[in-house]
Image 1 (cartoon, one colour):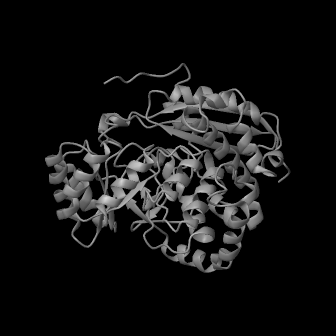
Image 2 (cartoon, one colour):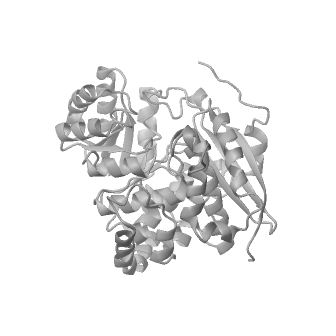
Image 3 (cartoon, one colour):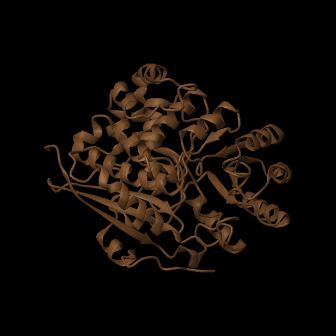
Length: 433
């Protein structure tokens, strides 16, 4: 296919009323309406690029506005002018001299940058005729490194060091790909453990998941201490002692409370405690990790950028890195974090709780195994069984494992009938509680 020119960008405010069923509910976010600032890059060659960033409803219009502003950086440009130096394109979005002040590299503008960058990668993969994971896996080490902005992280991993790591592990790709084609990529389910679900519903969903072959389950905690303990015992009784149980406090606790509450739940043998305190508190996580060992500490879905991940790793504050496909500035910055995690030998277990996140992070997880990490041990990617029917290329999960996506692109394209039903062209619909 010839080098397409981006002729137009459509930006869409997309929202689903998931709060009506308590889907996605946790100790802090009790009434989420899964939403996305969604963009479509239309080209003169007919091929399109699709990208999104995830929100919980109110405020989605802010991401939409930021995305509309950033879209001027791709309007009228040829795809090759963006991909020839992907790191430079990423810096152009995150380093706009005035818009940057609103971050920098965090919050609404970073979420918007993720949607646009992800759309460019989707377009790139479609033009190359490959799923994104394969596009990345087939790249030479030099190409991968050129896509990464190493600004502010060279004290942890220099460009040359990243290049050496990728070259060293390139020879394992074919063997690992064969393994994934035969077995899939291991996953865990959060769908049975939302905090708003009744005990009967949790029991029923745990039973369903076990019958489907799931072995890793996550429970939302952070409510009343006695209630958390009771619900944890309920889930453990349903899934048995041989399966893994993870817990997620969703930033609910202060540091000392997190230590106390994690210790109280230790009798249930949690495989990790996720987001025990503020996602910005690096030293707080380090103290929690030290005092609740051997329970592992996981975080990252609200980690703003590669610099914060660098500090979490340097401070020995986490045992599990949880990348998010659109909290960071898209594919490029996630590549940086994958390399940082490999440098510090910390497993990556991607976050996927939200509309479209499973579709995206499966590609990043597969690439990580094929080209960056050394093992699948202690690695599982989140799966949430909601809203996949709205995607042209939905995830496929069998017996608790992601099957490899086979269609070209980043799996981000939403069905036209969904866009006609769940788009809010006249501004937000407020769902006050």
